[in-house]
Length: 281
Ligand code: NDP
Image (tube, rainbow, N blue to C red; front, side, top):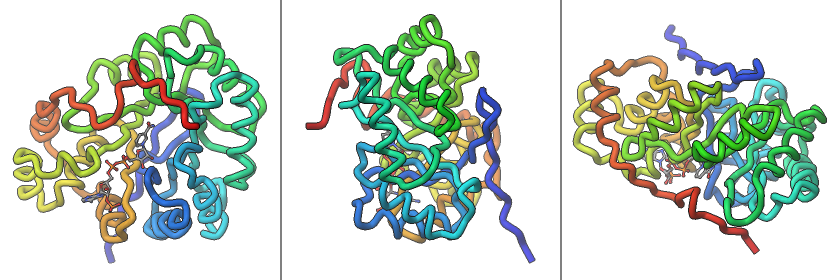
């Protein structure tokens, strides 16, 4: 009998642990989110990444409760939406997120975007510190923060972010920001880890996939894992949900990792955080 190697965990700067591989639910329609999340939990995922902005927290919460898996065995992340950066709004939005998910606590809550032109994310972070002190969120972090945003948090606030969730894939390898995170104890979470499919036809990735007898998606996700980042690919296709989970029974060589990292073109699929100030109406 063969056994599936388990997903490694990463220890965050406050001692909490997070499964290195999770399931992302961005762009999963609300009505399909419960079933998609239940599929992921059935396959073995124990880490779900949602956000108020995705409009599907309710389905995630239903799946967590209906799965029958003890709550403390599933790591749940959500994010503060852009319209709620004022500290009192942030505190209320956190309560709404917990109520919508219908769970007692979050494992991780993030500021979704820094919105540099909209308000002061430092004040928003101080509200996040208050939530953390309140005990209903186990870790707090940020998303889409650049080094200069993180420098301000370091200089002006008390609790360091546990993670920075940023766009990372072979065409946007983010070496300086990842190195800054490593230096300051901030774990990097890689969003759009396969660039929404955009890197899978790359000849270098296809060549490595043929040699290791894995799919291009598995090779790219394994590359992230070997670099030490946290990933949560999204799929509504069961076979892909299974494929993306099978990362821990093969290895890339150091040369493979370097060859993939060399594909970097600093090419974003999403917005540039320094220019993105969108508030949903
Ligand atoms: P991904 O890089 O995870 O790609 C998802 C797309 O790739 C879907 O179209 C999916 O199709 C397809 N796909 C998934 N697996 C495979 C596979 N094995 N082979 C071929 N195609 C595949 O993109 P996301 O943008 O969804 O990023 C992942 C997660 O990151 C999000 O769900 C969200 O949790 C987070 N995120 C955070 C952001 C932030 O600002 N903090 C921004 C964007 C994402 P299908 O579903 O049809 O199978």
